Each structure stands twice: as C-alpha cells, then as structure tokens.
Amino acid sequence: MASIRKLLEKETISASAPSRVDSGGTWDIKGMALPLEGIGPVTVNIALSLRTRVSLRPFDKGWIKISSEGFDSSEAFPAGQAPFDSDFGLYFAAVSHFGFNGLEVAIHSQSPVKSALGGSSTALVALVKALGKAAVRLGGKALVKHRIVSLAYRLEDGIGGGFCGIQDQAAAAYGGVNLWEWTYGKAGIPFKRTPLLDRRGQKALSNRLLVAYSGISHASLPTNRKWIRDFFSGSTRQAWVEINKKVARFAEAVRQHRWSTAAGLLREELALRKTITPEALIPIAERLIHQAEEAGCGSRFAGAGAGGSLWAIGESRDIDELRGQWTETLGPVDGAGILDCGVDSVGVK
Image (cartoon, rainbow, N blue to C red; front, top):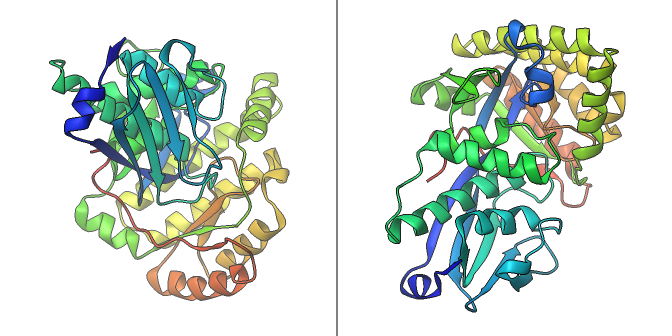
C-alpha cells in the first residue's frame, strides 16, 4: 500500500457528485433485473443539485481516517486493519482497493443524512473519483464515468452482500435526467443510458420539481430485502412488471415535456408500490403525497421510503401551490422542510 501523505500535503484532492430521486428504483438490483431482462427493466432518475463533496487530506502514514458531517465520530485505523463492516466500512474498502494510506477522507453532503437520496452511493462515487485523481497524480490512468459507476457499484454490492442496485451510482456519475435499461446479462457495461432532457429541458423540469425531507431518518435495507424476497417468491412479481411499464411511459412523458401526464404516471407507480409494501409510507409521507395529488401533482417517496425524502412533479403552477402546503405541513417537524434544489446536469467532477 502506498502512502499519499506527501502528495496531499502539497494539495487537497476533492471531488463531488449529485444525489437523486427516481421512478422505477429497485429494478436496478441484478437479482430482479437479470431474470426478467426480456421485459426491458428500467429506471428513470433525476440528479439533484444537492451535492456531496469528498476531500482527501494528509493523515498519519500507514493509517486511513474517515470523517463525515452528520456523524458523531470519525474512524481511523491502520490501513491493513480497516474494517469493512463499520459505519464507514464502504469507504475504507474503496481506499483499500486503490492501495492508499496516509490520508483522511472528509465527507460533506448538502442533503440530510439518511434522507433516501442515494447519499452513501453518491459519497462513494465522489470518493472513487477523488482517489482516481490521486492515482493520476502518481502516474495512473484517469477513470472514465462508466468505470467509476462499475467500481463503485461492485464495491457497494460486495460489501452489502449482493443486493445493491446501480442506479444511485449511475445518477451520481452522469448527472442529468436519464432512462436506464439494466442489461446485466450482456457482456461489458450493465446498462444502457438514454438522456431524456437537454439543458433547457432540465431547467424546465427544475421549475416543475419539488423535493422535501420528512425529518424522519430512512433505512433502506429492511424494505429492499422485503421487496426482493417477495419478488423472488413470485408473490409480487406481476406488480413489479406493471411498475416497469409505468416507468417506461413516465420516461416518454418527461422526454416530451408532458408534465401532467408524467405526474399521473408517478401516481400510478406509487399506487402499485402501496400494494407491495404499504409500510413504506409513514404517516407524514401519506399526508404530503395526498396534498400533492390534490394539487394535481404526482409524488412518491425517495428510495425505499419508510422515512427520508419525498418528491413531486407537476405543472409549475401546481408545484408552486404544493410548495406552500408542504412548507406548512413540515414546519412543525424538527429537521424537516423543502430542499432547495433543481436538476444537476454535470454529474461527478
């Protein structure tokens, strides 16, 4: 393992990546997408201008330190003894993959901790980019975006036990608004990306998009495991197939700037998800989603729900009306509120 302390004493190396909201998440998990590849499993995600920045700073030779805003403590270990099962285990694994030591990884996120906006994956993509920059300084080759996605996904999937999706990493790397078709059965890159909106379209969507944090921390693992377990058993598989059809139609509506149609399809996707896991909707989320639907918008929970964030899409006048209602509803909830963001067009940098 190589110490990069001296390199980092000369310059701090940083990278950042955007968070996301999605329609059709969970189809990016290979255990679901691979057996049903014939139906064209898809996800639409929207990269958000709530970025996570990772900075590499000098630390003791032979050691790795990880710190993050929003966590009570940091973790530091000798490089060969760094755990992969701690709060920061995923990031220790990434540093270990590159073979570096003598550094601190400092993480700063503009989105709330455990807000279901893909935070851990976003931080990992930014970290892989930053470590790749350090490797270039030492004579290595730069990582292109699809390599960053692949490496970040495989690290997270491996550390997480094989039930990780790839859409969070993809959104963080590429930015923008994309339709992803998951092609794990084909050699090479396991996805096909179709950008849905150009810069002008992304600006239009930003005025028709609303994202809010519920104030309740989100934990995706229990819901994701239930989704996968029930899918494997066959009990919910047809509902997931119907969701996939809705997502493909949602993508086309977004591409054509048919915002009311997109809102209706998002409502239909959520209705199907309610039949699969009604517990994913906590009381405050139900109230916010009801308000969105009453305003003519479509809304759903981010990620796996059961806390975290929600998002809505609709005509700009309807979103403006909904903003006031959500602000009033979330006002008394500690830590909750509207998140100031739009579409991020850049991706990791």
